[in-house]
Length: 112
Length: 111
Image 1: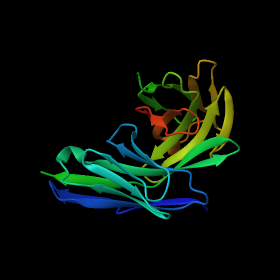
Image 2: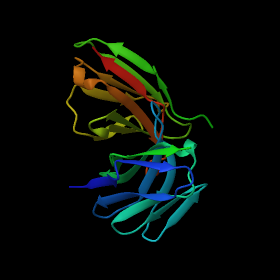
Image 3: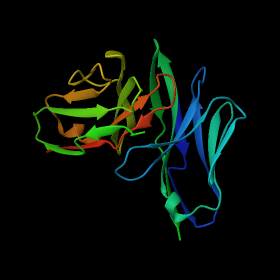
Image 4: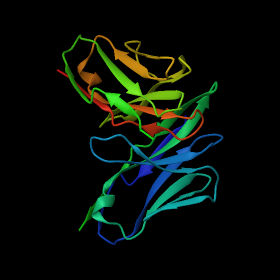
């Protein structure tokens, strides 16, 4: 069964304390992996798309990387405004239609 | 470019009633997907529409249905509401096989 698992479920850091979030997947024929950020009560905000192992994408304090079995979202010197739930998702294609399979998310809290 | 819009933002309904939610995709996007988000189950795929046709459907009962109009706007309907249908319903649009962009969601509460 296609699965996406994120760890840890929750992470609390001090401002400036760097760390990484993990997203592992068991999907045959991976055709990309997406990272989203979600603030409470809002829809997920698109961050990155990664298509192949070894690929890296960066945006401000965030860097996403992809291997054959997992992806990491590295956050460098985070600020309180980086507090959010970070979701990863894998697209599955069935008869031309796409659906996203999401992990459960990592709830990140950055304390000032 | 305007993002995905969803109306209404909040709804309170009673068990047994039905509800219709609306979604307007990003201009030019022809694919619209719907997801249900709950604390226990996370984000789960409901269905996807492309050019007014449902292309894919998740594992939800037939009480959940949807449609897409010629201007790509989409609606989803839930009939005979149950307490467990309380959730954040999210709509996402995309250029078919690319990343999906989400709207702010409709928070449905069933009492």
